[in-house]
Image (cartoon, rainbow, N blue to C red; front, side, top):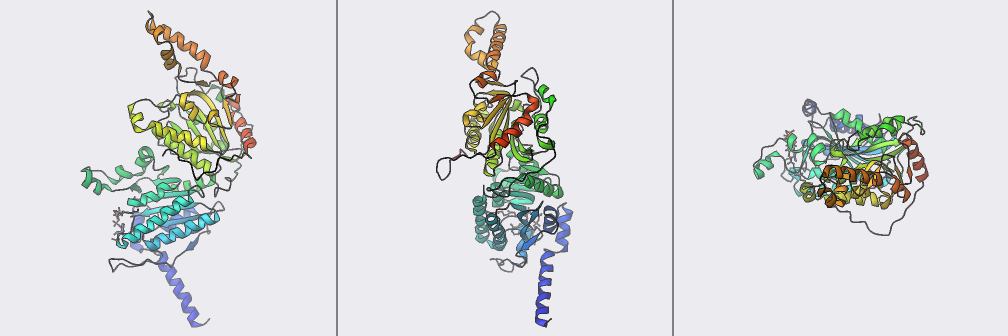
Length: 517
Ligand code: HXC
């Protein structure tokens, strides 16, 4: 081997080793001390063994506009592609050991390169975020760099699935890229997201607040709805990202992979015939129905801690991924409120983008009444869910298991907004409103002029219940395609999904609709 070539090989080896050691032994140890994995360890766990192909190992930052700033190989982010269960994905993993994982021009160019390739080949983009935000030393160039990423996030939206895993700080404008992506995972106790940190909050509002209380995983999973999933540590986070990918197609032209869990399509569950309490004001757990019907009782719930009055998530029926949207009577009686409408609306739109059939399990007493909800915008938030279901062209099926009242009935994937097949259980109550409210409106004079108002009210409620609070009137009108035995729900759903497999619809030509945001 000639000596010059030998020297080139040695240089390559040295540069690669330098890049892998990142910010140095001390910084890597510090990362572990905080309970976090390093950027490379994370990629090792995320991807199938030995499949990672790295790009731009040798790329360096262009230094600081302030002068004197050291440039690092790789510029604080590791990018490339690999596979998850044999399917290609594109990844970037920010390296906090280099300038706090902050984002400068070169760092962003690396991310943009894999985003562009992901869209070209039609594969998901997974970002492992651990960054102090815009690299302060690079000034406006760092802001410009963020803009390039946001632009690509938006262009890729609805084309390939985009997943963000927040595994450290995420501050300032850095939160907006993850929030445009489809799903955000947050690691408890080591990640946080906020537009302005505790010190700015203190200066502007004089409030003392910790990072955790301002933008920790629990806050975003339960209050703001920014995080779709929270996990205890990095290892679990990466495992859950792999699990989520298993439910999704690689892009909007494909269907999700079929996974046969060896669960018979004609399996019945006689216990479901007894799920609904005889008193319709009594509660039960909708998860019982969900787990009963899905293949292998496997369900990946999205936004599990946020707006718990509605349940959204992925499961499989006959091996095929489905998106489930189910009212939860065990929380706030399953009422639709602002958060529930937003949560389910966004989930429905994701499924529609990526060819995932939608199934609604309906037990909804209505929209939440009161000034808090009205002033908080229940009209426009509720309209999001209405719009999302109405717009969806994927196969759509509904099962009304109990209450389906008023506007909430219409919104929850009813026949009237062109759901494909609507089933009802014999326990379904499809009406303009609940018996008590209805009796009080229609028979107010008679009730309150009576010597025993309560008895008259009960009598009128019973009369109303007999007439309207059943599925038969709706079935007679053809609004319900069949009233089914609860035990057979799984079989009906799987058969109907097979029938709808080749569904095609075409809307009017337009640039895009104008969903009430
Ligand atoms: C450059 C940064 C940096 C940044 C951290 N570092 N953030 N360098 N630009 N944004 C560097 C630190 O100087 C330090 O370098 C190393 O990373 C580790 O940081 P520490 O502060 O020692 O770590 P820690 O105590 O864990 O705190 C992490 C942190 C904190 C909470 C992220 O560093 C921090 O508050 N950073 C600034 C966050 C921020 O305000 N970012 C800008 C947001 S504005 P040395 O050499 O000492 O190891 C923004 C606008 C985008 O992002 C707009 C887009 C539209």
